[in-house]
Amino acid sequence: MRSTLCILAAFLCTCGLIAQAPQRAPRQANDTSQVLRELENRWVAALKASDTSALNAILDDKFVDTDESGNRGDKAGVLQALRSGDLKLKSVSVSAMQFYSYGDAAVVTGSSAQDGTYKGQPLSPKIVFTDTFIRRNGKWVAVASQRTTSR
Image (cartoon, rainbow, N blue to C red; front, top):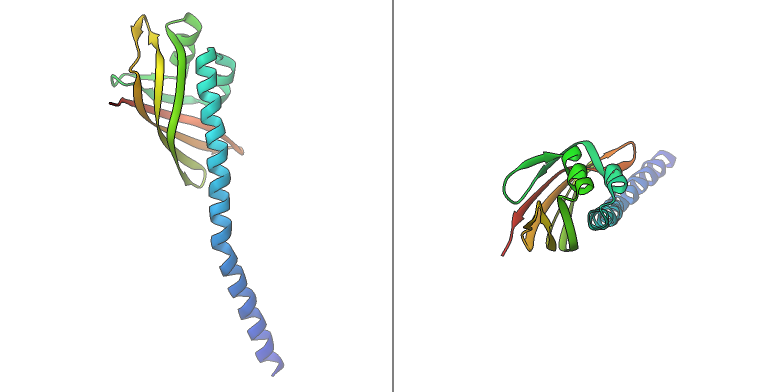
């Protein structure tokens, strides 16, 4: 009888742990989404302010950028474009962001309205984007960004 009660108690504890597991995953996903939303907003603010120090912390050293024209660049190129004044953003606003978390990797998709120039040429006023992040040593950093002109 006592062994039956121990088995029943162990079974109920296991069921309780299993029932709690799905509740933990969405909360963690929501926490990740909030961190990435804040990171995206800091990224936009840094671009508007030409704040290369902030961008240096957001972008991984191996960051790969693919622009609306299909040109590939890297972190050094982005920072140089801001330092030189080649990239000037008057305004940028992001919307419709979706967050996809895969453990220590995550993808953010969204839309953006922007007003600015690159080497004197106007930027596409509307884009859609996909940003890829990894979590390294507990900190999220951007490893890739791809933008496409939107209508």
